[in-house]
Image 1 (tube, helix red, strand yellow):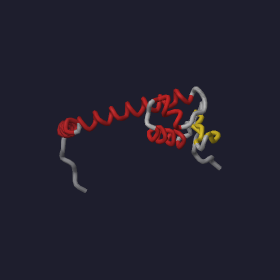
Image 2 (tube, helix red, strand yellow; image 1 turned 180 degrees about the vertical axis):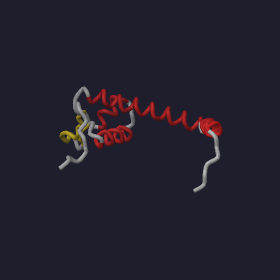
Image 3 (spheres, one colour; image 1 turned 90 degrees about the vertical axis):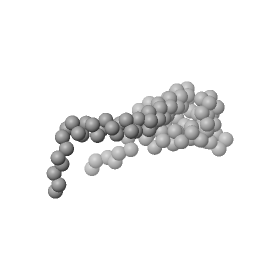
Image 4 (cartoon, helix red, strand yellow; image 1 turned 45 degrees about the vertical axis):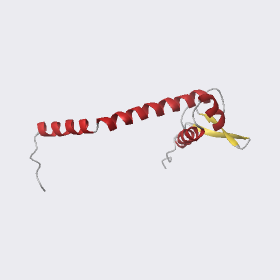
Length: 107
């Protein structure tokens, strides 16, 4: 194996240089994450009022329906919402008070 001859000061300088180089990318990703969290919180707030379809959530939150569908499907995957009854060809989604664990039970 090859031994690394760099000092901790060199490593810190390299990390600092990388952070500066990627500063714009990091800031964009942080802003994107903040917006995503705001959108998901809007959807959760709407679902606290009772079961809603994707078009109904879209209409009340002002978010595009494709984005609402994407977030609701993610929330379903992680056990935060579940499908309810069909209304005019759309599922009603219900916010679960405690997310359901998708892990397999131990035997």
